[in-house]
Length: 163
Ligand SMILES: [Zn+2]
Image 1 (cartoon, rainbow, N blue to C red):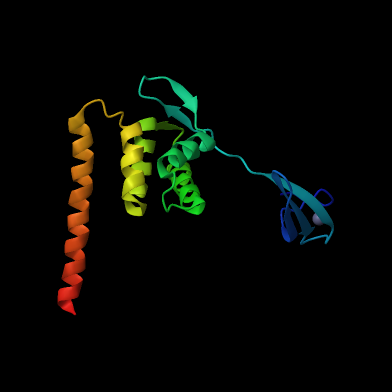
Image 2: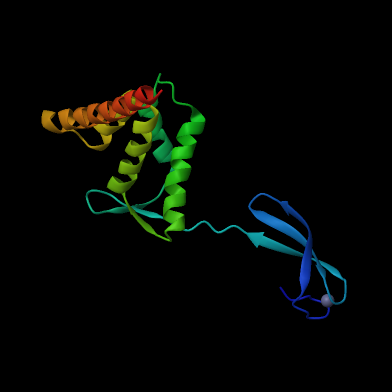
């Protein structure tokens, strides 16, 4: 950031404050000591979602959250937990610098998180997201869950035996 008065590249930030969608910074030129203001704009990368039918739509956080909310109805899952799942997914794609996400991958990540939080919500979300068309796939999801329960129960027993 060049000083508008002397052209020096050296400046320090003396104050930062966020406004609606920008950050306003007061800078001081190291060379001539003059203060000037810069604005920083936060750029959110556009993430496109490829749906199962091969069409694309822009990633929509509210839509994702609505989908999760329909699965957690009357379950002990907090708004914070839902918002953390959405953060996790957004950060995953932003950090990977990906601009396209498959809807099935997003659904898979939600499932993985819900499985850790609440098994009923997990099954509800799975039944919508996986579009259980046959009874086998539904049973498969349930037994997958049972399998995990056994593993964690055994792990707990293991801990107790060590006591
Ligand atoms: Zn200067």
